[in-house]
Length: 233
Ligand code: 6PG
Image 1 (cartoon, rainbow, N blue to C red):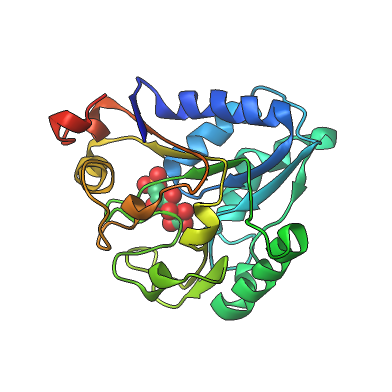
Image 2 (cartoon, rainbow, N blue to C red):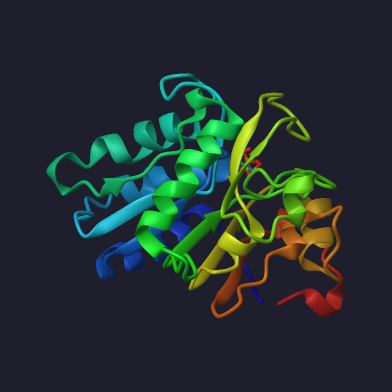
């Protein structure tokens, strides 16, 4: 694991996203306010996304135009601003509900990767204050999934209290590069639990460990404040 403390995690993430866009390939977007800042910065770079395919790590079970929609956020911050340089976008259909929405996404992923690993090129993830990532919440059954790549989550572990669709750990850990983007003192405790010690089920982000890929955690000083000294970069 590569932990990096930077002034502006969103700006650093934007640079990394831009590099991935330059190479084409499969990029997985996260929800959340810190990822959103990264998307806004990438949008301003006017990149050609036409060789990319965009996927999502999780979605709230609401229609795409709903204010809670992760896709809606990504469209407003980035995807809707790309005009004729737009990627292929595979959104999670939150409006179908957690079960049918997850089934539909599983099918899309299988159409792309069949029975092989879903080898996405860049998997972006945020971190919740409870150390969740994507919609993998502490103690939830979704953490135990070993076969499926997308599952429904009936009850989210924190606000907003809507059901979700999420990629599973096997799908996340199949990525070539996983990049967490985390900023702010309200995340410091979660950062210490997720990236400062042993993997634990009450800190789902600590279970992210790419099988054959890299794991980078972009933090600002505030978010990194409670990392044990041996885990400090
Ligand atoms: C979700 C998100 C979630 C998010 C983190 C960080 O739909 O809830 O995908 O995993 O990335 O909670 O969000 P913030 O940056 O807003 O804290």
